[in-house]
Every structure is written in structure tokens, then in C-alpha cells.
Amino acid sequence: MNEELWSLLADSFWKILLPGLTMTIPLTVIAFSLALVIAVAMAMIQFANVKVLKQLARFYIWIFRGTPLLVQLFVVFYGLPNVGILIDPFPAAVLVFSLNEGAYCAESIRAALEAVPAGQMEAGYCAGMSYMQIMRRIVLPQAMRTAFPPLSNSLIAMVKDTSLAANITVTEMFMVTQRIVARTYEPLVLYIEVGLIYLLFSTVLTGLQRAGEKRLATHKRRED
Image (cartoon, rainbow, N blue to C red; front, side, top):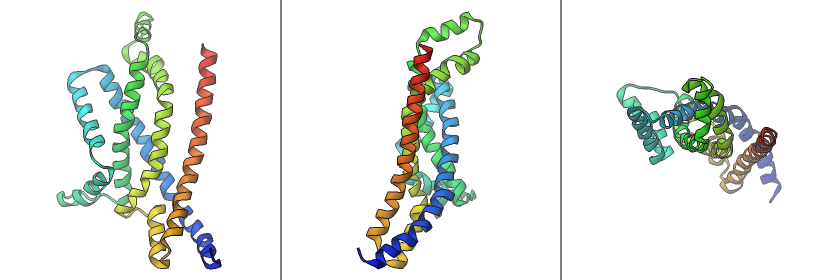
């Protein structure tokens, strides 16, 4: 690799990393936080087994798990203006990512809720607790510990999926890289560079995931 390419990589690194810190990470954090709220609500609705609400939750999950994320982005950002609904790029990305991820996380949390022994519910009722108190104090905390690994994997996947937001003009890392490529005509090295930056973010999150799993395992051993 010649000196010009090294200079290009050094110069572009900070230009790519900065939108990663100011756009990609905030997009991921906000969207995933909203996705967790949606997921917990959808999982609890299914767990409660209220027929009409359960069917609505299943319909939402079916739609967002069964259609491509990129299509969902295009429908919201490019399609909704045709019916008079205009959403700026960043809020549109947050909306779509949170709804999409919420559908996947809802299934992880639902499975974790169903894995909690039924005796936990019975013990709560015997202690005089209401259904919501049992869910909040007993069932949901146990379920979230079980769901922690798959939810962490979903978060890592979302960091990479944010590159799709470039298609609706969100100026995150991938869009910035595309602009540099258009100016320098060096697609190979620049796309490898942005891939390595995504890998760096994913590696940090993987390390945090492992630390969290160890802490949860230690806490569980103490309870046992």
C-alpha cells in the first residue's frame, strides 16, 4: 500500500468515526431502548394470553419479522409522504429500527417469560400479590436475566444494521464512507476501513455482553 493510500486512510478514519459516535451510536441506543419497551409490552401481552390483544401483538410481530428492514425504511421515509406524513431521516430511522427490533426482541422475552417456572406465579398469588406485582417483582426480572444473551446479540446486530439508514439519507458512517469513495475512487480500502470500525464497535459490545453475563451468573450463584 503506497503512501497516498495510508494518508487517505488516516484522514478518512476520523471523518468516518465521528458520525459513528454522533449518529450511529445514538441511533442504536435510542432505537434499542424503545425496542425494549415495545418488546416487553408485546411479550407480556402474549404471556397474559388475552385473546384479542395477543392476536394484535402476533400480527405486529408477523409484519415486522416477515418484511425486510430496508423495505420498512423505504415505506416510512419515501412512502408515507404520499399520504401527507413527513418524517425527518433520523426520527424515521429510529421509528423503523425500534419497531423492527421490538418484534424480534419480543419473541426472545416471551420465550424467557415462559421459561420461568409456573410455581413462581402461584407463590406470588399465595403471598397476596396482584398479577402485575408478580410480573414486575418476580417473573420479569428472572426472564430478563434469561433473555440477556439474545438481547445483547440483537443490540450488536442493530449496530451493523444502522448502515441501512444511509438509504434514507441519515449521515451515519456508511453514508460518509460512500461520499469519500465517490470523491477518491478508492472503494476497496475505504469499505474495508468502515467495516473494521463496525467490527470495533461490535467487539466492544461483545466484551460488555460477556462481562454482563458473568455478573449475572455470579449473582445467580449467590441467590442459589
